[in-house]
Amino acid sequence: MTGRGTVNASGRSSQRLLLLVIASVFVLKAIVTLWILVGQNDPHTANFTIGWTDDYQLIAHNISSGNGYRFTPQTALTTLREPGYPLLLAGLSAVFGNALWIVVLANLVMSSISALLIGLLARQIFTDRLVPLVAPILFMLNPGEIVAELRSGVEVPFTLLLLCFFVLWRRALVSEKPTAYFLSGLALGLACIVRSAVLLFPLFLLLYQMVRTRGQAALLFRRICGVAMMTLALGLIMTPWTVRNSSLVHEFIPTASVQGHSMQVGLYQCTHGGVGQDFAQMEQAASEVRKRQALAAGYRFEGDYYLYFYDPKDEVRFNSQLKQQVVDTYKQSPALLLKCASENVVNFWFRGRTTFATIGITLVQVPWLVLALLGLVMGFRRSERAMLVSILLFVVYLVAVCAPIHAEARYSVPLIPFLAILAAIPICRWIDWRRVRQRILIADTEADLAPL
Image (cartoon, rainbow, N blue to C red; front, side, top):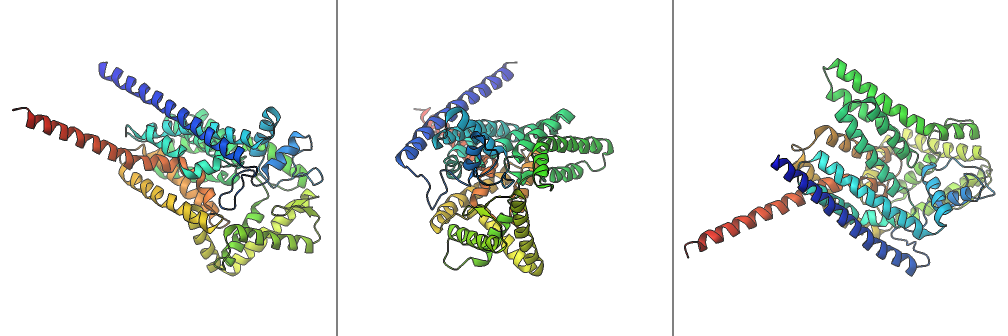
């Protein structure tokens, strides 16, 4: 009983220390980031995209103003963006006002909650004592996460919802209860209406469940039913948005219609790379190609980078055309598809908007990924295997989703929590080694001095 009480007291002490560290980092980051925003009227930079980004705030403003889910009051209702993040921005605007510092503060709160969940996952997956404390610190101090917190992008809430999903997925793996699977599906559905890239991930989990349950028919059936419950819950979350889109444009659009736009940008950057243009310049050049094509086809629209159509059917039709053009190009040249997909795998981890940003990102990502790989090797045998494999599957899945479409380093931000957990392992092992070595040196010194 004494040993168990000591362990529980040590665990509570570690949790209190983690809360103190997270609160301290939150306060420090809040002071610094708000100082940055107050000191700059326009915090947007060419090197790192911070401030208002991707036009989410335009949709949020129109929702708050009673104009509906559209980019401008004059243009049509849109299907271009998933509804989760614009609705969150609209809610923040309605309660606290339409200011960037409100969004940044909300990001910091969500990142702090994410840090707590990272500590929980690390404690559940690995046996190393210090990993649940070190991993959240690595996450909160990661430059990619800090930059994401300074902009009105989907990365921070999407990351939080992913962590909620994996916490609940772990509960489902342990308990095998249908309710646990269903709750994990609800979390994944919420993540999907923020960023729909996770829509097909249940298929990967289904395949993994089938592989790990070979030869056990009853257990396999129960696990398949569990994934089915998870998928059902995801579908329930997606249903209102899907029904709204179907009634608007009379087509089945479960997520968003932006894929054609993204594929066109990805193909343009792939085929025009190496001509002295940064990623941001190529994005702008790709937008000029889109505008000329839309004008030539007789579409009516506003906007520059994103096109805001006056008819929602035109929006869907034009993006479908862009998607089909890219698909046809890749069908004619499979070698080009292989080239672009390979480049996007690298872009996913290292590519910034400018050359300067790419260099900075690379200097951060290379040691980060090396530490994560070391952690994977060092911690694999002493891990909760099913949960670790599920996380690794998600890493592979997210890269694979982006590879044939479009990728840049900001797309890897949602993976920072999982890499932080892995990267913490070699750091913690080194700390433990240093402690043991120091104790040995002290013991040897005391032994040498004892005769005196």
